[in-house]
Amino acid sequence: MNKKNELKNYEYLKELHQLLCSEMVALQDSYRIQQLEVNYLRAYIHWKHLEEEYNYFVQNAYEVQDEDMPFSYFTL
Image (cartoon, rainbow, N blue to C red):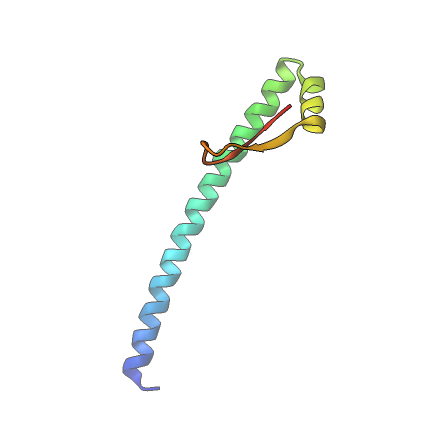
């Protein structure tokens, strides 16, 4: 492989690396936000003394896929 192709490949790999790094940062930010939301939900369940109802829901809920909705959800 000649120097020109090596440099071209290096630049391409460098761009890919930068793109992957920015994607990783975005994923980490998203994860932090989701984790904070989970922590709030846990605290709310505890604050409202809903642990028993939550455990019942976890044990008995089933997933429903609605054709009109882009995502599934759990219900009893």
